[in-house]
Amino acid sequence: DAGITQSPRHKVTETGTPVTLRCHQTENHRYMYWYRQDPGHGLRLIHYSYGVKDTDKGEVSDGYSVSRSKTEDFLLTLESATSSQTSVYFCAISERQEGYGYTFGSGTRLTVV
Amino acid sequence: KQEVTQIPAALSVPEGENLVLNCSFTDSAIYNLQWFRQDPGKGLTSLLLIQSSQREQTSGRLNASLDKSSGRSTLYIAASQPGDSATYLCAVSDNTDKLIFGTGTRLQVFP
Image 1 (cartoon, each protein chain N blue to C red):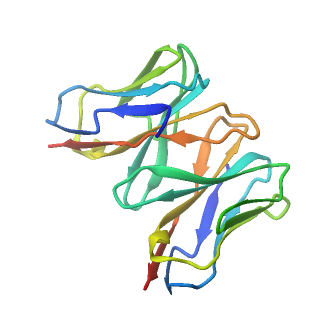
Image 2: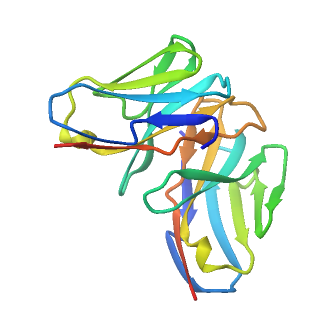
């Protein structure tokens, strides 16, 4: 999607290794989000950020950490990947004001073996 | 806690039919309601955004309505085509800083 990119697009990693996913935006939006999408569970919020160095937990935050040192970048880290973290991860941006919607990245497909 | 539900969960129709997808939410204190489309293995594409002060939005063959007082939104697809086959997601944003998604409607339009 224009203005928001995720990297990598695909990744296979081994159980117990650290993994970092990157979300980069060029829209200067204040809010950034990390979601995971799994069959039968839909989209669930992991963590979100409401400004540089300002982050908060979502409903499925255990095993994940985030950092936002610049407005444009929001990193999601799996400190020690587990098979239950195999999923598709989506980043989203928003201004969270009436009239501003959410824009999603293309996703990162992560497989933990 | 805001909850969003979509009915039906799946729908299969012949090409050319007009469709209505339903979305309901439990807390009417929303900022926006957004409809997305997701193709298999792909990301989310925003279709329509309705502000809380609006009643409907239109884009081409798509029309979305919003009734905040009853906690409902509908997505109307006119003259459906096989290319409309996808999963349609409804999501609401409110003052909790979060976007809450519905369960989705999987649509298949066959020739």
